[in-house]
Image 1 (tube, helix red, strand yellow):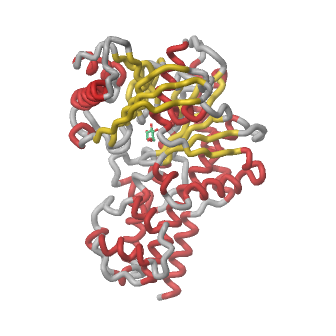
Image 2 (tube, helix red, strand yellow):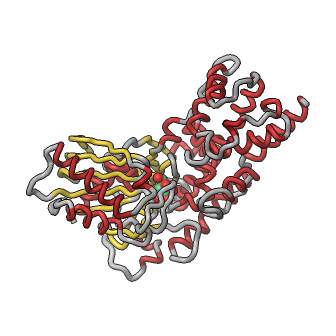
Image 3 (cartoon, protein in one colour):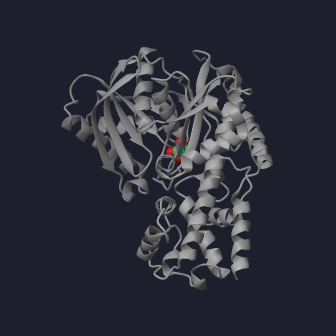
Length: 445
Ligand code: GLC
């Protein structure tokens, strides 16, 4: 029995580990898909032009930032002071109820416009003066300019009807006008990764990549316009433009049986494979599926399937974070969490197995994140001859114990000593702030 347990856990560890050869292959496939995406060919990486480059850091002015991408909607009033300094003048969060996330798109945008109205009235921003909004929309948008963008498809559990295929700026401006807010207009639309890159680049010019590791995952980077083949013939300013890779959808990856079950039972089978292996929306579910398997094989919880683990998605990624942080002898904290979930009679070994499972899964997520970042860095700078700052935001990166270190360790495996040229900077709230900066860049042009 003991041997069987050890053998199974060793097998699991191997399945969730990435060899040097697999990482190399991953990066090669990633580049292939990036190139196809840039050429406008069918690819698992959409490579969406963001119609903005990084800012100079000198942009000035007052702007409203609207950040929509999760269960909260955030509004900020910011004063950009130039020389990389920003003052937050006002902030307000609104909870997005399920009826807006999954209901009619018209209701969602009416609600957003209503929140903006309350915000400007409460904070005394309303008036006859024109106010520009930087709108961070953390979903895949196909843009033809910085002030418009068509939602390609919803992600992260959103499914408000009548929005896919429409220009979200148009929908918001219309809803604002209906509320009588004629002087408030969306001056810039950006994905959250783009906002994060821009927010960091405003004060740190070496920043050329932005990434999110949260409920969802994605990254953007600064690309030479001459290499964005699908933009050929279009009038553009400057030499570079930020590209939103939408890497969540990258799918040339070795998966385990657990990943395949998760994918099959998801609302978008075959899509967003990388995101399903990295992001906070899914890690807990992979852990639950592994636990179910080990219970069935008789090496966990005495073969008894607890009621709590029968329901899909009940085991949250934040539980994994909590278990990963448990350093007590006998994993007492893990025990109390399991008890809360109705698993009352776990033994110490069970808890160690659960912790190991969490480690394999989060370790793989960190390694895949690093491999994806490495692919982007090598695309920009094949010899890693310059310094690169990666602006990062998201709860998994910020809160999951060991996740950030796991990324750094894997970058070291890939780049050895040269990895010191890569700096990863947590850029909290970057996405909203970034959109306001983009509004300022647009204002100057
Ligand atoms: C999802 C969205 C993407 C976003 C990411 C992080 O993958 O498709 O646009 O950037 O989540 O929020």
